[in-house]
Length: 206
Image 1 (tube, rainbow, N blue to C red):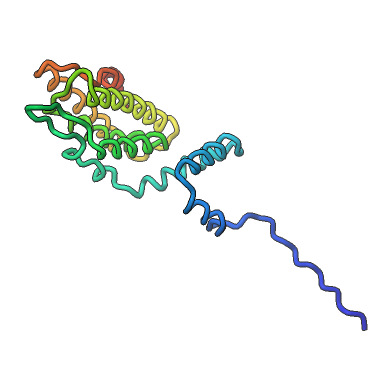
Image 2 (image 1 turned 135 degrees about the horizontal axis):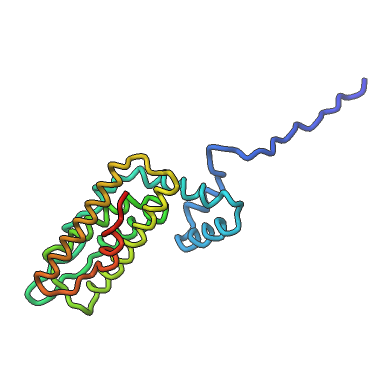
């Protein structure tokens, strides 16, 4: 009796869903941050058209797990000035700005405005020199506010705003913080650092 022919099993070529390949996960866990940045940029630039929206959607899902209101400790953002030296930015401010940029870069502009309002309010009562690290950092924050506003507008245009009450509150809080900063700086004769932010937000209605 001839031996039965064993037919090869059909191989399912569909990609496995719900987990990361073990070797890929090992690479991700051990790669440097610069390697991951470079690979991510290359993947988004050369991948299929839908990969960028899928990436930002995954990024937003991750970022939503973090309570942005509790992230910025306003008392730790700047070193208060003394009689001998002006106020200076801290590492916590740099960490907070990184979080803010992650938020508006992923399309969560209104969430980033919440943190930016805290940053602007943290400058009230401080003094700084026109030339120095503090003035340079505040100029960068002014640019960040403009970028966050643009991200917020794109968030509306993309139909991703589910809570307009939250969005309006975020805008109003930032507007009040910027106006309070202007009054505070004028009181001590300093140079107002948020000129572009003030212009961008003054006529913005949602």
